[in-house]
Structures are given as structure tokens and as C-alpha cells.
Image (cartoon, rainbow, N blue to C red):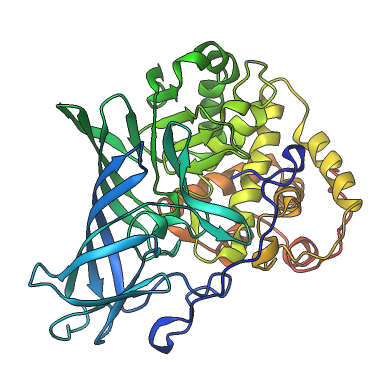
Length: 460
């Protein structure tokens, strides 16, 4: 996600709904989002069968959630917004289980307690009129467009359209089937493995084999044209309204080159393919999902002025989607890296050097309040532009200290060792120490653990 100052504030903060108390006195999985996520099981796969009526914004869903129990308990909970009405729940395919759906939690009571390590398969039949959640970061989740819909769930919007264990550390594989009115194209994460049209409806089935965090799961519907843009180094697709074809070709003309540059700098692209999707509506910010990025029509005007955002969202496929934070306090591992990728693209494509961008960013931060701790900014500020810029500056300071050879070896090792996994700041610090002949303690203390802005990194 990109919330940079050039775009202004992405959304005006609004009062968040009262947090829901964790179920059964379990301690929160993440203090930033204490109501999200659940204990007692580990999900390995979601199979979602969705029917969406675009005109009436009606969603009917059947979810099969395959998990393994981690301890013995009488009840288990899933995250599901109250806009969805639950008709039936089963556990391990047996007769309907008892359930209560209240305050965004679907609490299920199996007929008998299961030992730790047991297979736990939830079957949930549900329906409703999906709507985004109102949060301190704006509206997140399933959003109705003028003609279609989109899903942008960061950080806690996934429950607006399917029952889940909504925590970034809970990654799983997915099969997403979407049936919708035939004139509309339905797009979801992964590879399209099946498409059938019957009467006036089309069913699109996507398979996402690489583990994915719930907030990165998405469904997009609209009057779209689907095009193949390139086949190397991986297949790349463009999806957009037909009216935007010429503008799309200009604005995304260098995306293939970006992918080649990032593959060289960061290591192999982590998924089977990449898709850039442009909606017919204007959007406040571009949003990444696993294997695809979504841009509003306002970012596709044919001028090429938003090229840095194309680079930013592409970089998230490595930093955020393949390597996903475990706790939201480490958001700089996503946004700082994606912001630095903008500067690296500029440097490697005939533009200004990363160091020139770093000096500009440092001057900008010096004019702003210095009251954010990068390694723990707090939930209110975790998408603040200062996280993006200071995170990128931290990486540039590390690059200056290590030198280019060691720095880019570090990035490639980082993406290889944690491919499709979850990461923490402590892990990155530990890995970086292997590439430095001297202690990095003072660098981390200055950039991550102190609110005041250190001097700008200076080579030599």
C-alpha cells in the first residue's frame, strides 16, 4: 500500500468502532489489532465458493476452512463481519454445529472436544450485503464500485467477505471460485484454472498455491479487458476497462523492465505471475494483493507520472506478500522496503540516484514532527508517510554501511531464506549482522529505536 505525501492523506481518520474483547480471555495475537485473529488452531487452506450479484451487491458464500488444532478447547472462533449472516456451520463434515455470531466473531462449538494436532475443518454457509469496515485507517475490505466491486483489506478487512483467522501470521493456500453476472470479469489471487459460462452467469476458479495472509486475499469484479503483457521473466497481465487501454500502455510500459531490475536486486519473483489491474473508478491509493496490484483510473492517465507507484506496488510482491510481517509493529519491513524500491528503480532506470532521493526524504522528515518510533509506531501511525520514508532511509543507511555488494547480497538472502513466510525486525537485524564486519547496534538504535532523526547517510 502507498500512503505517500504526494498523494495527500489517503483517508481522513475516523473514530474506530469499539474493540471486541478477545474470545475466552485469550491474550491478543497482536496488540495493534487485539480483536483480530484466533487461537486454538492453525489454518492451512481456504476453499471459497462465492456468488456475487453486482447490481444488488449481494454475496452468497460457502467456505471450507481446513486447519489443525493446536490445543484442546470447547470452542473455536473465526473472524466474520456482522454484515454477513451465517446460515449453517459444520465441523469435520458432521451435522450442523452450534454457533454464535456476535461482534465480528463466529464462535463454533463442536459436538466433542478434539485433541491437539487433530484435523479441524469448518464449513460455513453465509450471505449478506458486503461493506467495508470503518476503522481508524479509513474503510477497508469489500467495497462496492459504480459497476463492480473490489477488495482492499489491509490491515483487517478480510472478514468483510469470508470467515477467517484474520492475522498476518496465519498464511494458507486458497481456492477462490466466483460466480457473477456474465458481462463482468471476476479476478482473484492465483492462477485461473477453470472458467465456465452458463446462461447469464460465469464462474471463475482461481488457485493460489503459495501461502497467503488473509488481508492479501482479494476479489475484483468489473467490465474489464484482460491482456497478456509479457512472458519473461514471469507472465505479466494487464486488466483494465477498455477505455483505458492506451493510457495503460503508456503508464505501465516499463513494468516488465522493473520486474527484471527487481529480480536482479531482490532475487527471483516469488509467484507464478503478476497482474496490474486498473478499476474504472478513481481510488485514493493503489493497493497490493498477492500476485496483483490495484490502481484507480486516476493513476492511469497516460502521463507516466505515477511510475514510482507502479514500482512501489510491484516491490510489495517480495516485501509484504512473500515476506509478510508477523506483527503490525514491523510495518516498516513492508513499506520502507517498497519505498526504497522506488528509489532503486529510479537509480537503475536512468533517473536520480537512490542517494539523491534519500537526501530529499531526509530534508522532508526534518521538517516534520519526530515522534514516531520506527520499530513500534503504534496502530494509529503505522501507515504514516514517515514510516515509509524513514524505513527507506534506514535501508539506505545500511547500504552505505555495508557497501553495495554486501547490501544486495543481504536482500537476496533475506527474500530467499524467508520466501512465503513471516518475518520480524529482529530476524532482519540478525541476518544483517552476518554481512557486516562491525556491529550494527548503533545504526539500529539511531534509526529504529529512537524518535529523533539521525543525520542523513553519507557515503565515504
